[in-house]
Image 1 (cartoon, rainbow, N blue to C red):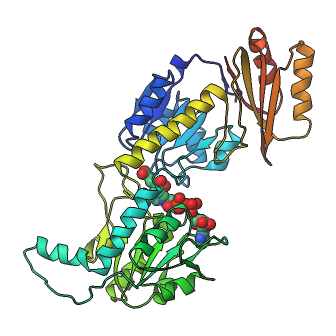
Image 2: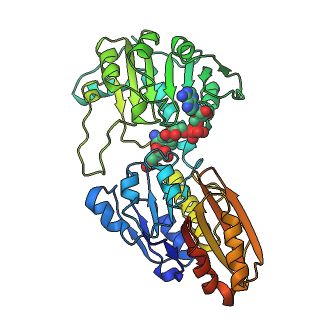
Image 3: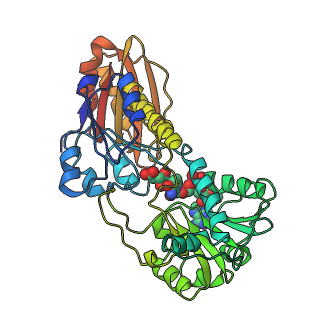
Length: 411
Ligand SMILES: NC(=O)C1=CN([C@@H]2O[C@H](COP(=O)(O)OP(=O)(O)OC[C@H]3O[C@@H](n4cnc5c(N)ncnc54)[C@H](O)[C@@H]3O)[C@@H](O)[C@H]2O)C=CC1
Ligand SMILES: O=C(O)CCC(=O)C(=O)O
């Protein structure tokens, strides 16, 4: 395979934005001089995805598009990926890194939206609203206080006390709830929240359990039959994290046995590619289960902010080479490079690499004006500023070094 090499003018750089990414992203790209933007309203897969990736330099996705190692192998020019969301479990981050492709996401922009939805669901579930709503839609009438409770004084159990979990805890305390949580890390409890020592302790204590962990091997089916059995009879489960965290068959069983009084589920092990595809789940038969189409973070405010935030990170990487906040890559924070050209060299982190880089420059008589380096166990990222008239020769020298993964020049 030829070493991917990029020295295009901006108008030739192609951005592909899938899954209905907010127009604020296009606006941000346009303002930065990137007008070659192709969009699609839904996730792509298979041949359709391969086709758009053939000549894409930058790709923007949300949570649905699966970027496996095989898919990335079909994207020879891909320079960076923007995950216009929080979760990056849909991307093979290591495969991307080994191809010299940094991945950027939006770690904060939609967290408040998820927290607000979950808080509303806590109230709705505790009042039995999903079931009552369903009955009235079918012409029935259930004016009854049975199984309907105030949330004040009840216990909310949060699993994963990160950006979203903490906000929900604070909001729930404003409603008078008691908050307990479990996390793999020791966390500063906000307000009067209490960190418990185990998942079981949270499940046993809570009237409503809400899941806010990322998708990892450890969180796969974290809530299965044994965990559901430990939840209080008549309690509720909310999952707005990832579909793989809950064993749906076990949840179905717990609902059938009426061990749980209800649930609110926003994320599913398998989700439709787009709005024209069909949704199916064993949970559709329960009218005490609130089903939402993975819209925890889908508010106008969050999507507009995410569009700007992630597009700005892609622009910064394209214009300046900065990888700050990349989730899979050595992070290099870079100043401007006015009056000079900037060379970006991504290489396998093997002994002697920097000696070879510097030797090439010295042999070619090219003066290095500034140099920045960051490495991790697998890859190194070196950024070198040179006089502009030396940039093409310098790029040739750099790209030819054995162990080079990718090289690029910024004018
Ligand atoms: N439904 C939706 O539309 C959205 C869903 N999400 C999902 O929510 C997840 C959480 O988001 P944030 O709070 O921003 O992430 P975060 O990274 O700030 O918090 C996650 C917390 O979970 C903890 N954790 C990880 N593994 C754990 C385990 N095995 N047991 C207990 N705790 C564990 C971490 O230590 C961390 O404190 C995201 O990874 C994403 O999958 C995020 C945004 C929107
Ligand atoms: O809005 C989306 O497409 C995904 C939201 C989400 O799950 C995330 O941000 O991780």
